Amino acid sequence: MNRIPVEEFLSSLLAGVQAIARKLVGVARKRMPGAHEFIYHNAVGYSVSDSPFDGICCIAPQWKEAPASAAKIHAGRKPGKG
Image (tube, rainbow, N blue to C red; front, side):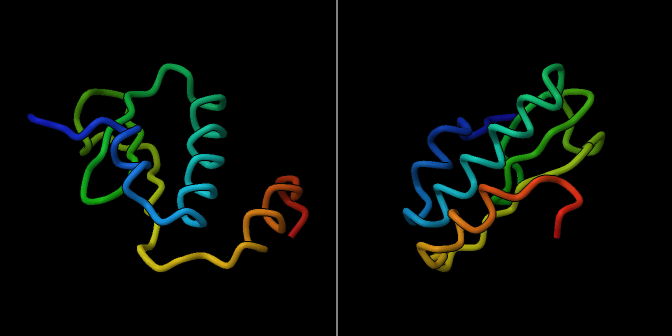
């Protein structure tokens, strides 16, 4: 399967969306170091194998621009803290 590199996909996003997506990708890479990472249906997917059908989760950025404050609001939150 011919896949788009994750970095190329992230670079194509609008600045505000890209910042949030990069933070989420960083969290996913840290929490799932052995997972396969790829682009599938305009999302960064994580799987236990090289197949998207064995997916664990995905990060599916929306194409609209995110407000500049969104990255700041969500970056400081801890899991389970609303």
